Structures are given as structure tokens and as C-alpha cells.
Image 1 (cartoon, rainbow, N blue to C red):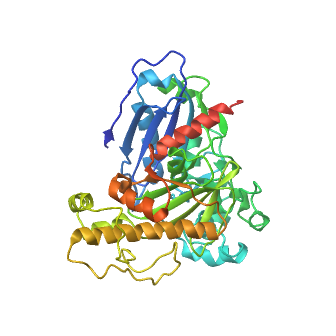
Image 2 (cartoon, rainbow, N blue to C red):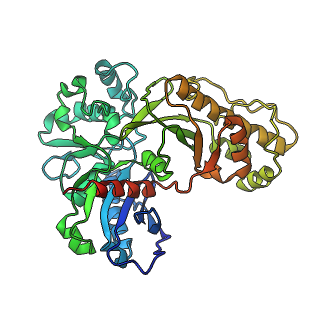
Image 3 (spheres, rainbow, N blue to C red):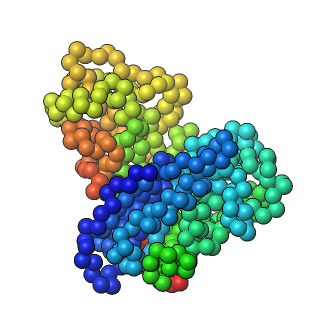
Length: 441
């Protein structure tokens, strides 16, 4: 198991200073960030998930649980007694069916990227057209698939998301979720309830109760307080999804502020006063207090660049680009055929020709073409009714490329800067601050 970057930057903790713990459970590992009230990081660490097998399949629940407690052990001893609030994010639509009495998993966890196409016709027959649940990887499809195989035999079962279950291990109140995680099971965050078309289904008794992200649920269990040396008043708050936590980390708190993530794909998230949904483009809105976090993801991005150039080449060629010069090359960089946002076309072919002899020109053309796709994405969100973007923060590997940032600034016609913080654990620690500020437990 790898452990890295476990540091305490402030050895002389002020007596009585409050600290906040955020834990991020991502796809391959988990990390924590501990921050003070002004957002300064006091310690952070990460661990990869240990591999456990349950027969032929991976025992994910055991891996996550062990990682949670290992990370708590990794927290510097001198900081633990100052932590007043904890929150956790998990991967969206990672679904667990547990015993409603013991909390033990009744079925293997169904991961965020797993599809249950067997359940899709049933889900489409009950949900409104183009609803967020109408994709085979939605939490609701996973629930219906399990129900059809096993459900009618199980008297005491409960649906939880990954973050819900991990938080339960800390606070002991079974059956609580948040409205970000619950979106893909069909919860309606606008009216703050499950819709009638869902409540009337035979499996609706499995659905968890739902609160706002960062809501204090209960104090940390006494046995854990004693074991790890946390304070008696340490509160455990409801969580969120990993992608929303990463948005929160950038502290883009006003409508019109957006975060573009330039990783292997291009994902954009925009804070909007209005909610928009359109499953044709994979566009949906998450509630953030009284605003909406609107998002879309293109298949273009870093994965295409890596098919053509090495990291070393990308760095050296980028240095030679003049970002104020417009590239006349018109590409649509995709790793393979198929695009969803901002063009909904499963057959859309990659366009990376003609290739000029000069590789600096070629890279310039690709980077500028990706910037045009980003601009088209923000334009589509506006057309669909979202607040117009006025500033873009950048996360992901592409944020390091200063020439690309300048190209994007020119193409978007907006200020573009690198987000100071992009780790989901940092965003979840901010959520823990929010929870502490409304703590009446």
C-alpha cells in the first residue's frame, strides 16, 4: 500500500484551533485533506486500495473500509484532537445494497462505471423521458437490476451510495444520503423529495432518507473517538460525489463561474441560477444550496494528445507555440468515433487531418480545436438556459500548460486561470466547515 505526502505543515497548532477533515474515495484510491477555517492545508495523505477477493470478484467494500481506517491512523496525532467536523465524498452512482439492521453488504458493490442494461427498459417505462436515471449506469438501473435478481427475497435491505456507507461506519446512523449522491437514483433536489413515480415502486422502501450535502448527521462514534483520539464533539456530516467535491475545491462560488477539467477527457461544470437537463447531451444539474451545478463532458482531451505525442514532446512543442496567433487548422480531436457533448453523435468521426509537417503547428491546431469544443460546450449550456459563463478555472493535467491557457482565453474570450485547489478531498473538507457552521447536535 502506498502512502505519500503525509505532512503536518504547522507543527505548532494553536491550542483550541478547529480543523476540518475531508476524505475523498476515488476510483483507484483514497486521500484526506485537513484544513483550518481559512482553508490552509495542515496535512494530507493518500492510499491505494488494497486488493481483496471474494471468490472471483474484488471485495471492494472491505478495501474501502480498511482504507478509511488506515487513513484515520495516518492523521498526525497532534492534529486529531482539533478536528471538529468530517465529511466524505465517493464516486457517483457507486451503489451498495446493505442489510438494514446490520449495515453489512448483501451484494457486491456496483461501481460507478458498471452498466445494468437489463434494467433500462423497466426504468424508462416509469421515469419521465430523458431523465438522469435513463442511462444503464444510473443508480436506479443498478437497484432495479438487483431487485429483479434478488430483491423480492430480501426483507431487510437498504440502498446506500459509497459515501453514505463509509460515513455510516463513522456515525452509526444507517440510511442517510445526500441530494448529490441521490440524484441518479431519481431524487428530485428541486422539490426535495423522491418523485411519485418512484415512491410507488415495490422497491421504494430501500431508498435512503436524503439531506443536503454537509448536513451534520451525528457525532463520531464513541469507540472511534477513543481509538483514534478525536474530540467528543467531532461531528460527521453528509457527503457528496467526487466530481462535485473537486468543483467545491476550486471555490467558484458565484453564478457564471466555471471549472474546466482538462484530464483524459474535457469536462465542464458551471454554477448557474437555473437548472437545465438534457440527456441527449448528457447534461444534468446538481443542486448546490440555492444554485445549480450544470455539467457536460466531451470525449476530447488529453487522451488524444497522448495518442500522438509523448509528455516530453508536449512540453517542448508547447513552448514554441505563439498563443496569440489564430490556428487555421480545423480538427475535432477524439480518441475514437463517438461524441456526446457538445455534439450528440455516437458516429462522429475523429478529425485530425491534414497533419502539417511542422509538429508545433500540429499541436497548436489540436490545442486550439479542443479550446473551440470547450467554447461550444459553454455556448450550449447557455442555449439550454444556464447562466452565461464569465470566468473559467482549470483543473486536471492540462491546467499546467500555460500556452494552452492563453489559447483558451483567446478562444473563450474570458479570463482563464488555474484553480488553486483541485483535490476532491479539499472540497470535502470545505463541506465539513459548512457542516460545523450549522451544527446543532
